[in-house]
Length: 541
Ligand code: GLN
Image 1: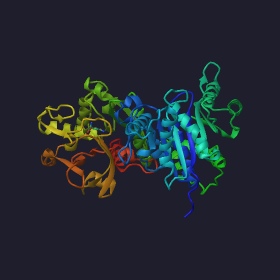
Image 2: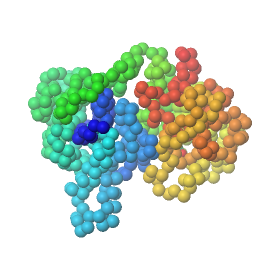
Image 3: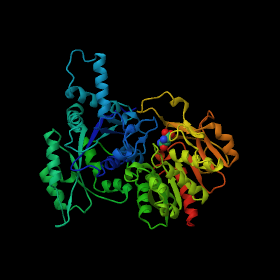
Image 4: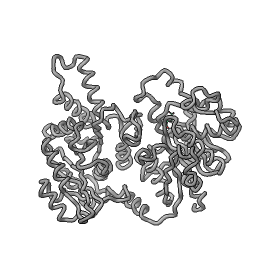
């Protein structure tokens, strides 16, 4: 066996403003290197004080992305998994909250005997220890570390200081710093401005980090002159001033970065030779399919965090993957479930060829989602319910057959006479909210002769979960008689993982979150089956 190569590090920071696609850029760079035969590990350092984003409202930070091992993480990890197509684990998302709580735990144990605990070196050492946990694994050649937020934030300082120290710890040629910035466009003169980038790099330098590469994001074409100016003022090789103009097709980013030799610049710095020729056939195919004119279908996504689209990032991407697979353009109508309760926004639901109710928590907007499920059931509109969307599909069905509108989940009405969805038994004594749900990958047995059996063409599947409530088995037999099929069950027979309606073209709800396992080149079978039904309803497929 080859001796382990000295681990290489790529550190990605952001400047000027946030939300310019730093996560996608990091993910795309990971893919460029993986395509060249390197084993990649990727890590997001988040400067907020929460231990993980699991307790945060999606309004604050977008979707909570769940990994195989059940870790609740930042949505950028979704980008990493979708682009690089590797399975990440709990080491891949580190927050200030984690770092501080571990340092304080050690202090209480007496590990620092007599020492005064300080940001430098104790917190920075702990951050470096976390990076090291990934780096020292045998199956890792290159570690990509992205720091959340933008340079200049008070909270990110300890992380940046740790990264600065990493240069001498890892060796000059083993660390590569990338700064992702934004070039604003001035409408009146029609020009792009480099000054905020210059300031941001100056700020980074004052912390002791000199970027090896600047990725300049912009909504407009970036001229050679602009790049020269950035190179001169920011003291970066012209070749390493990388223009990245906004593309409506996210999956084009790796190809755009490939065109301007990003991976070669990085590998040259590390003194590494490409191990294999990258194969872009699949990715080029995806972009080609995205650009092609396709017949349009409409899907109403009925949720309650719709003001922030990032809250449903993986669902939106899973829909996109399945649409590309089937040659459909999917227009998503973002419908706020609470407005349906006020009898508004129904036109979007009525016009839709399919309805999707995603996951969620809390009582607000619940009745609107139940009404959306009812509409799908009564009008034979294809429906996909994810986690909460499955639970509410069951509530709607039971309200109909019991002729009782008091049927509910105990999450929303703890004293309902018909608790068709109820707290899982092992959740009853849990009082802490953080990381205590049923989380991560669990097996599910697919029942033969069901819609999902046809979609999966497998007897057992593994899917990711994030919930506290479940279908109440006391109602199983009754509902089966009335036309609901429980087509996915945990191997011990105790937990309903999938429910579907027999006399309906496609009304399927999953207790798990299939959206987390959909990949651009491997769309999730349930999303494909759902969209196929949607295409049929629209008389396209
Ligand atoms: N609130 C529901 C539960 O805890 C659904 C969770 C979800 O949709 N992720 O079971």
